[in-house]
Amino acid sequence: MTSQSTANTPAADQIRRAPKVLLHDHLDGGLRPGTVVDLAREAGYSSLPETDPDKLGLWFREAADSGSLERYLETFSHTVGVMQTRDALVRVAAECAEDLAADGVVYAEVRYAPEQHLEGGLTLEEVVEAVNEGFRQGERRAREDGHRIRVGALLTAMRHAARALEIAELANRYRDLGVVGFDIAGAEAGYPPTRHLDAFEYLKRENNHFTIHAGEAFGLPSIWQALQWCGADRLGHGVRIIDDIQVRDDGTVELGRLASYVRDKRIPLELCPSSNLQTGAAASYTEHPIGLLRRLHFRATVNTDNRLMSHTSMSQEFEHLVEAFGYTLDDMQWFSVNAMKSAFIPFDERLAMINDVIKPGYAELKSEWLFRQTASTSGSVGLEG
Ligand SMILES: O=c1[nH]cnc2c1ncn2[C@H]1C[C@H](O)[C@@H](CO)O1
Ligand SMILES: [Zn+2]
Image 1 (spheres, rainbow, N blue to C red):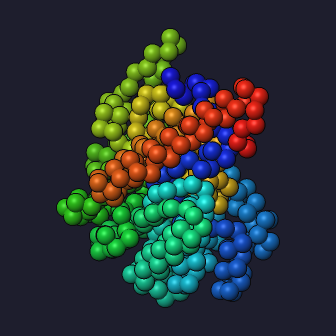
Image 2 (cartoon, rainbow, N blue to C red; image 1 turned 90 degrees about the vertical axis):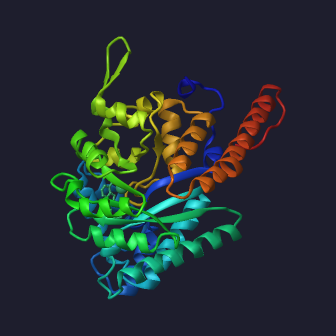
């Protein structure tokens, strides 16, 4: 099993340079702390718990570290609070694209809920256009810095609210104009995805794509509804599918009907290890279900969820997994190809990313790894790091 092998274990700088694919990242969960402070000052937003960027970054991380999804979500009032103007949205989106690119992410789908950014008088369309403009600016600035990234937006509807159909229609209107799909998010318990069936049925009729946050704070019934009632293409988290997998004392494994369906149908799981530790969905990295799901060849992907609240990045997530499971460059490539296969852009574009960017990127890193090994065993000076 490659995941247990010590072969080609990547060093931190290789993890950062490896081409990574991110499917689950919230725009309002990934601001730079300094930007939150700047935007709050500009907008006269006076409710921030700290105004020093370092202290504020720490505050987000600690406040989100509550063991409960509901408390975790409370921290978003401050980021959403400062994202109410066109300029703020453009800046946040541009910095998001730049930060991801600098971290070696080559393709990202970043989500946000347009309905949460209307307090300053913007329309839903103006919100989408501002964010798109920011992503394009960030892609350009990243390219100038020598990084290549493509960012698509996912429009989220909040599951406790009642605007899902309207947001789904918005996602459809901006399809091919920067928006690649739809999502629902927010507190899971008490707000089943079936409340928004009209939105999902509309998107299916339009041949559009959507993912649903499910199987994070709530277990199998939520996953089952998301797939079998709503028809989700992917599962946001889906980590609790583990509840339908039995590992016996002798090491043999039995999958229940739902877990079998998820694996057989290659349903992508947008797994977010650090976020799960904070909301209590997993106890530690070594105990995180991603280890078993990868071994069983589920369509598992690695994601950040909220870089600010979880004080993380794609590289950081992989560093934790490399340490916990001994993952190699082969494992990283497997996760990245899985994610790219599961993206919502057209098949030919996904294939081009896999063949022209991801595979060559890992091939180069693997040959570099071999060179480092040879250099260190022959006593000569190898590459740094
Ligand atoms: O992990 C999550 N689960 C459910 N909802 C979430 C999670 N992370 C962020 N959100 C919510 C809070 C944001 O304001 C919203 C849109 O990005 O999505
Ligand atoms: Zn999420």
